[in-house]
Image 1 (cartoon, rainbow, N blue to C red):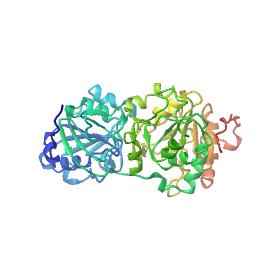
Image 2: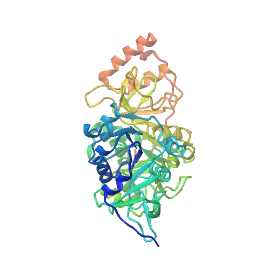
Image 3: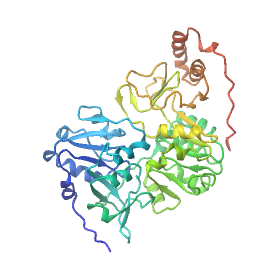
Length: 445
């Protein structure tokens, strides 16, 4: 038997002391109620370090009132933390998503207090980490003190997220909608063309990994005529629901946990949260396992679909910063790009519009000064824009530049060719072409 005693958020966060390192559960599981209660204590606290990946919800970490109370040490920068992470009162830790648990487990970033959000306890006393297991599993396992926001709207998920109430130091009941995001509502004709190009590279029997945003969602819409797809991805969104329900995604061909869709966190709408609730077909698991390259590579034909802010003519991919301004993080891109490249028949794919919303080319001669390289030119394979898809694997520097210029926006190709000439003293049009084997045809395309 177990006894469940609930506190108010204000009572629970009194456990946090000046100088503590506090973990904040991320994505749709961000415990907004607890964070706001902690921020309300800002006058009592000094030098509290906050650690998180993506946070969501109605939160402001940049309020000057608590700049001296809290230091945001972000492991993946997102909109609520972007300004403060680029200020004197915050910073960013460059790290692969798969290796963040090691920071907690090895004592490199020991957690004093973990603020998490969980589903209500079942009859045996077990809650779950719900929509976001990812790095929260290791944070909860290693934290000295756990404060949990218990929310009946948090889905109860299968996988690695189970946590018993006896292992939670303070329980706070708070019924509130989870933050939602609908990627399908933001599509454009350019994104639709990119989605078609990417889907044309994906064969039947592939194992999918999809990054965050409208392009992965659009790719999913183009896979309705495929067969026997699997899902092993760090993030899951609404776009997978019709493919799972129709049997297109059935996970029959996967070697790692066949028959089940594997993810580490879930971002989407209420429909998605209801879909994963107590659904044994979906397992939400520890990021150290899901994003482990040694695990990823065992699945067949891994199609890893990720995006970029910009890519230079040699193939270096910047996906986390705009020059020296930290915009997001390394995340799991390299985990899956490398894992897919080692998978039998794997397809590592970087997909992006050829230009920004203001018409600036994303394909550039050189990355901006201060920009971070997330995927090295040695790891990049397929690059896709609305103007087509090219494979840089095995190509020399001049051949790569020619291929990338060919899928750049037409208005920028002359400029890119001039930059190529300045570097190599001849035009991309004189580069000896390299015959490109095509992947096996994708179904229905």
